[in-house]
Image 1 (cartoon, rainbow over the protein chains, first blue to last red):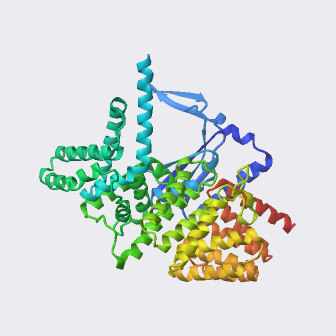
Image 2: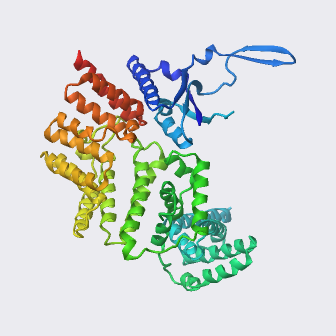
Image 3: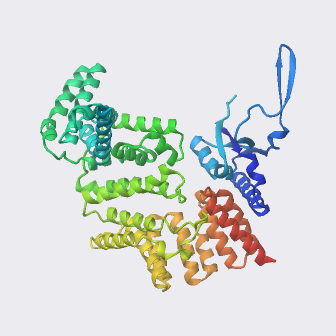
Length: 115
Length: 423
């Protein structure tokens, strides 16, 4: 069963960290990714550029509307994701708990719709 | 205006009484009702309705002299109403008779017989799925709600709710008995109850920063449950051992984090922050348990805690005794987690390479591949043995597997130190 771990956090928080803290943060994510790989459960992962780079698009009445900015303004922004393949929700939750993002933000765990 | 004030006062007095009775008697009342019908969910429902009635009745008519008896009588009536409404007339008639038996007498007496132990044995019955025993006890005996329990056990609230419902259905439909097991099977069954209590405690213990109120309370509730078991079964050495073990751990709860939230290992903790009263109680419990002559897992683990406390207090190295205790515990449990601690103690006594040798015995254990303490212990021993590159790799894995941010930072600090030494 695949689950998508969506990592939400306050983007501005990152800039407030010291260089050393940022390094520590990056290496914590690196170690977490390695652990997922070693366990053979990692199906995909990416860190996203800040929401200021986001563009949204929708088509109404055949006309496309392109807007600068994210779909939803919120306090915490989607900053990255992990796609993992594990037996059940409990296993997914135990990996979510180890994610550094769970300590400095929120991790949403969503089962992938099996086709 | 004066009437309003009076009414408010009566309401808050009633609420306070309800809270006190709920705290003290919830499990007792559920046990008493459910032991007669085996329907735990119905007992809980009836009781929560009775508590709601109390909140509306007591401010108007004054708190009854015997609040427990009042609640029991009301809950019983609600229980019977619910059964009639569910249209299970023939079952209802039989059960109503059972509920009524002894109930009149019980409600009239000031003390309702304590059947919580029988309820605990039903919750921790071997026929109940092991993973739901601790949550079930917390809900049924202490009245904790599914949401709080779910968050402590890292399970979604709806999943936890379903598991609890299924377990209660199983008790009712499979007719799991509410009784204290006979002498021949008591020991084994007590162990199951104690394991569930310890599981609850461990869930509470994994939130050392006390950020999550539900989890912190769980450590407290587990100690409460274990105290209950030691009161109801005063001669059970393993129950005394478990209570001692949890008190030793709890006694250090203020010392294991710095003011900034940093992780502080046992060997560096400030002894002034340890709770002496809890340690003394633990020592006494352990002594009482030892008089039975029956040694078990929890007494051994508590003895290890006692040895750690003694070493820190006197400054005398006692690693020989610690290794011996771990040997005994490992023989008993064959647990790879115990083997890790044993290897660390062996390294203290006979050097890092012997510690690594001891770790090698369990390196093929599949459960350890994702177990942070294994990689952290391995990293430390490798570093002390001069295998810097291998140590760094093990630290990386440990960091990736840790869920507590403070411990993660502690491990990252160790790794940074290791890299400096290498240069």
